[in-house]
Image 1: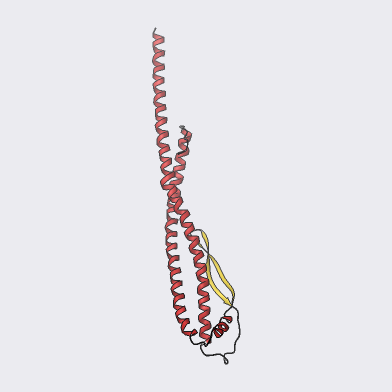
Image 2: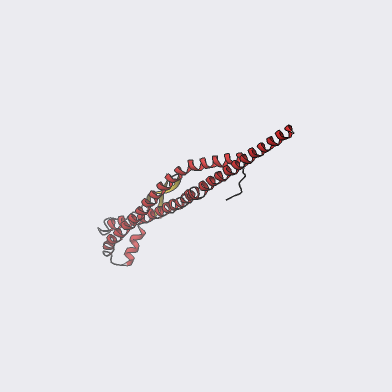
Length: 203
């Protein structure tokens, strides 16, 4: 606790600070609750993405067994090239976070009459896998940003609840006691001075 001046000016300063802290605290508490919910949702989205990736890997395993060699699989992978990853921005609880939109792939033509029937499905599955992985990267960044903001907001809530507000209340209590003591002393001194004056006038 810092050094406090025992004056009426300091008392008003501490009272104003207490009002300000008490006014801002509910807003911070609401923001903390919102961020807690968003972090939980973000965690669920990451889990759902991983589940989709695992399911897709299992499905792709069936396709890849149809290819005769690793060279053929390599040729297939050459047909799945990322051109760009499109992302956007959303505002959650006052902070900008990235959002995943889509993956744009290079259009690499191939002769559908010269390829096996399952190649198209395999390429679509591989594109889906790439899209899921790119989406996961964005979801991870979302989770990191939201978690960091939640930590900061929680620290501010704790600072207000456990430090600033109790500190102001204690300062106000101490100042009032001191000012009360000073007022009492001033009244006592005034009475003593008045009595002495009366005694001097009577003698």
